[in-house]
Image 1 (cartoon, rainbow, N blue to C red):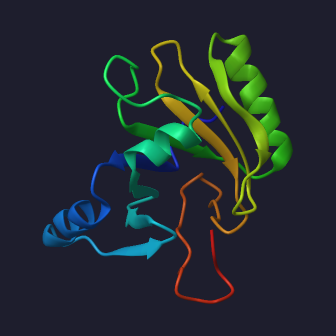
Image 2 (spheres, rainbow, N blue to C red; image 1 turned 90 degrees about the horizontal axis):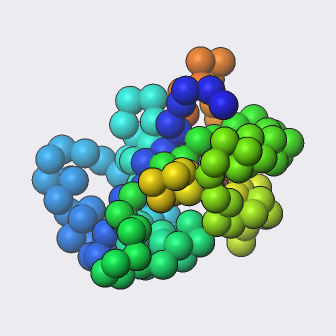
Length: 148
């Protein structure tokens, strides 16, 4: 696994409030399918409903569950890399909380939790291009031919 984080997803209780906060800081995002994407240097910051993020990570939300409301993503260049990385994480002591599969948006993804319960999504999404050095550039979601 390359030392790279492609996306950080914050589970928020009120998406409109969270988006307004970041915009008040001068950030400009794109709202897509009940999420907000911000380009943050060479990675993306995503705001998404906390319960939806927990469910997507295969984890429970609520007091005493250990879910901290943050999901990290490591994007890769192929479906095979998703499978290989999930297997390597499991062999290293992680728990696969959502096996790799095509999601409802159409990209191939799975999730593992590290030994402390931090959720890592491993995803192949050709609409999120990776540069040679692994940096991620979010697509222009306003273009009809570009969607997550």
